[in-house]
Image (tube, rainbow, N blue to C red; front, side):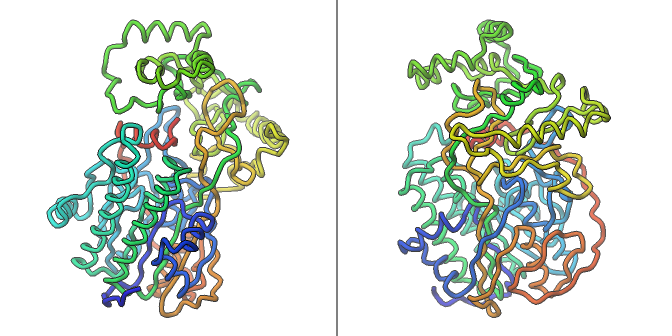
Length: 542
């Protein structure tokens, strides 16, 4: 690794989305990621346990707040208000980010591309939001986005074209170009701001596995580019502590389990067609959302109304899909059938009429339709515990088609989360055995099928640490809740008493103390069709 030029940077965190040892070690063995290999050789490396659920929108807020979702309030890509939903953003995170805590203590920061940081809050940090923000988002301080464009010539959050529309070569170039932009932006801001704390995140290490999980050449190219950018960052700064952290791991799936189909067969879920519930089918369309088209304001066509009518008497697009698949005509149908037509005929979970349902697959749980809590609750408070216990017992006994237990844990939410926002969590958390089952909220005829995506998130990520006081023999295994406490302790600051983690064994203990309570800001709606489309493209919205 080249000799670094010393700067005032005290602590640097590099976030790698979805990286784990089973993904990284073969790349190290083949000499493809020399920067990460050098960090591992001169520092310490270990598994970093993720949370439940181990998905980007909830896990990164847990990393940067040091708190479980019951304390920061984000469980999923979606935030629900009754039966209505919106995509989460930073105003959904009801806890201070670690750079906001550092700001209270007089330290400034540069934060680039960390997910769920838009819109940024006022602090001494320069924040350029990442994943789930709209393109060209507001930054802090205002004008930072325009400054990056002026200095770098270009800066984007997302590729110009969607995955389904781009050739593999074009898509790979977009991955690598976006990665290089992250590194260039971070290096420029480090040199210009000279912060005490830096945090840069690379998202493409996860995206590539959602879009090209079995293409070794594409995966390797992305990781090589990420490694190059980390190396360039370390050439210009020499932090006292370097942490490389991931929010979760990735790996292959065995089965897809359709939770709402199972619950329908157990008479917990009721369904509807057209309006009245969340759409739950996307097999014919490449995504459930509108392929980038603005259809909500368009007049519904006669064909759309006709298909909705057909669905009301049982001819739903799920049944049509089964016929189309048997005939091998899926690609042709996708070209000629408008996605709004498919949605109109899609069978949906009727939230208001159901006793229990999965709202969103990445929430990884089941919500009861409770009287007094949901707008049209049908489960009484007196029946809540018995209904939940019945569901837990039923789910614990589910077996895959090959005879293995489907779930390693089926837990009441209070066994997983604690804090003022536990009421926003699903009532039951379902943990796939070995994280080998792909959970789906779709209605598609059978409980089990081949997974919609061959790779998906796993519970175990990775942490690397290097610095003047880090021994390669140090046991730094920990939890993602430990990252924010470690950052505070690296500055000699006491850890917030409300944080759920503890400093990793790369810093000296600093004790704990209470910090001023956080006053939640007014919720800002995302309500952005392009953001929703990107989530659908990656399989997060069905």
